[in-house]
Length: 325
Image 1 (spheres, rainbow, N blue to C red):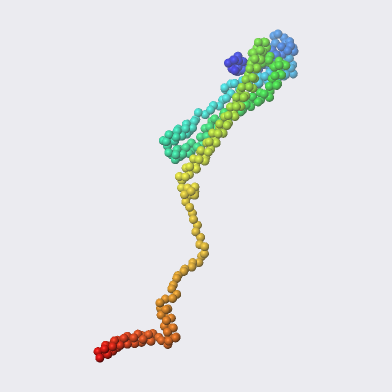
Image 2: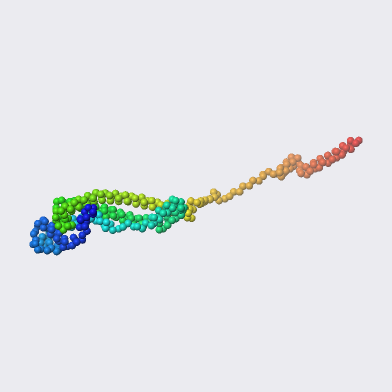
């Protein structure tokens, strides 16, 4: 745009047109073309007050209002295509991002173990790189340029477009633009200004508006995805993974068990089995039965045993004696 309308852009950036004497001469050119009053030939106009003194304050104020509107509109269009309007520059401090990519490559190549890689990534100067580098140094600057410097400016220009069209089509807007940029109302200068307006308005409300809106939408989506991945990695996955190596609450919870034992009853029963009928009980019962039914006792049993023994001995002896007879 600046190449195809180089003369227009140079005239817009010319600070000399902003002087009061130059503006007074612009007003005289416009008023003379409308032939409101014919001033004396030797009259000099150095201030706007001199112009009002000759042509009248109301008429001059109307021309000044139109001149100011077109001047502001043209300068607002020019700022969209002037790189000096975008004074902020993207941050070049991306050492931490380069370091993250380097660590990731080393981990993928097997040069770093997972624990060592996680510890280096979770270092304090690494885990805040998004807020400090990307958000402040990239996101805010780019969104400001796309949404405010371009988007909001185009929206303001669209609101005033109908007024500009009325001035240039049905009024003396083209002459005002020619006087503003070239200092006269020649037809060729008015034609140049008209061609400039047609080209820059078509480009502004067409390609610039559409591409800037699409770029803003795509950039915000990419940054949202990037922020989500950053949050998952640096706020959740890395802390959770490194916590497994710390002797803390999570480690105890996953590797230890606590068992609480309670007694069903506070008293304890002890069981012991004993023989209820021993050999001695048997002897006692036999002795009792003998004593009850036979009148015998242990002494009687001993006497019987003694008698049997004695009888056996004497019988054998007697038998042997009688056989000898």
